Length: 128
Image (cartoon, rainbow, N blue to C red; front, side, top):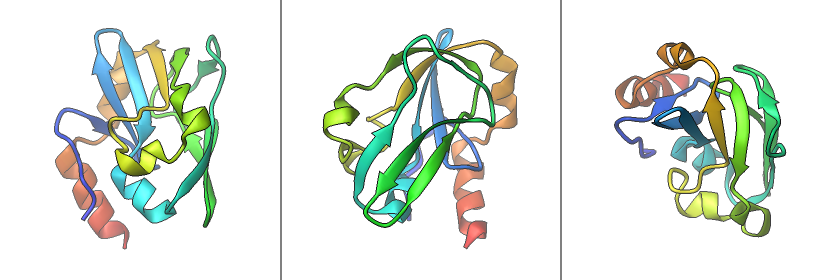
C-alpha cells in the first residue's frame, strides 16, 4: 500500500500539500508515483506564475505515461524544485520529500476541500 503522511492535505488527482505558514509545498503522492512507474521528466511552471486550484500547472512523465499536474490550491509560485529538472527520478525515491512547487497561498480556505491522510488512503482503496 502507498504511504501517506499525517498533516498533509491530499487531492483526488493525487497531489499533496504541506503547509508552512503562508506557503504550500505541492508534490505528487506516493500512490501516484507508484502507479506511474519510473519518472523521467517533470514539467514545472516558472517562478512568479499563478496557479489556480483545480487547473493544470505542469506534467509528470514516466516510461509508461504522462499525467497532468492539477493544482490543489491557488497562489503564486515562489519556487520550483530545480533538482527535479536534472533528476526527476527523485520523486520515485521519496514522493513526499521531493516537492514540485512552493506556492504562496492566496486562499487558505481552499485547504478545507482537500482530504487528510486517512481519507486519502480510503479514497485510494476505493479507486481500484
